[in-house]
Amino acid sequence: MYSQVEHPAGGYKKLFETVEELSSPVTAHVTGRIPTWLRGSLLRCGPGLFEVGAEPFYHLFDGQALLHKFDFKEGHVTYHRRFVRTDAYVRAMTEKRIVITEFGTYAYPDPCKNIFSRFFSYFKGVEVTDNALVNVYPVGEDYYACTETNFITKINPDTLETIKQEDPMNKSEVVVQFPCSDRFKPSYVHSFGLTSNYIVFVETPVKINLLKFLSSWSLWGANYMDCFESNETMGVSGVVLSIVISPGAGPKPAYLLILNAKDMSEVARAEVEVNIPVTFHGLFKRA
Image (cartoon, rainbow, N blue to C red):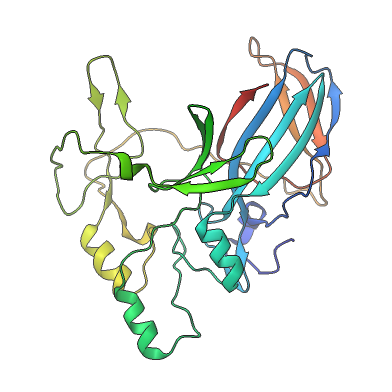
């Protein structure tokens, strides 16, 4: 299932390629020697579906969640992947259109509804996505795929099957509240620091315009990204990292690189004869 839609990303469309999930694991061709003591599964999440019908997803964070697994056993490697059956994915596949607004893609009302139903659907409130494409992590003996919203999706790390959606906020309580410098434009907080004595929140120059979020979303069809603003007077320093895509013609085998942690030298690589899209985060689950 490769992309049938000409994606507006232009020269970066290699990142936006749709792939099919696998019905069963495929065996990787290993060059080099993988230590026999390396046993377990490398689990990773990322986007794998970038259009539904004739509607494309416009941002890399919008592609529907695809769960990847590399299994290591006795020096051999297999690769498997399946889409996470989130509410956003299942409804999109059923209705053959984008149903829930993502970070950079707005979901328009159902065109099959009459004009009055479509108008009032703008005022039903924000429907938050559960597209769990960001990471996968353990909680006790269970494993969850997650995104930037409050929803997490329980998955089976062995079969990659989706079990159920959960909202951890239902079992949470407010411990402390603290003010921000601008109540109508709070900073976007992705992460925080933690020491033995303190929890450290960094107020970044990236702001969320709450008035625009509430008005534009309901009336004009904005997405999450449209409501972000940069306060250039605050200043920030850092670096920008970018994925480099080879412009060479023709498909090349995707591979997993295994490195020696002591000197970062290549130990082995496992090639698979299927296209593997970009992934974001993941973990290693020991056997």
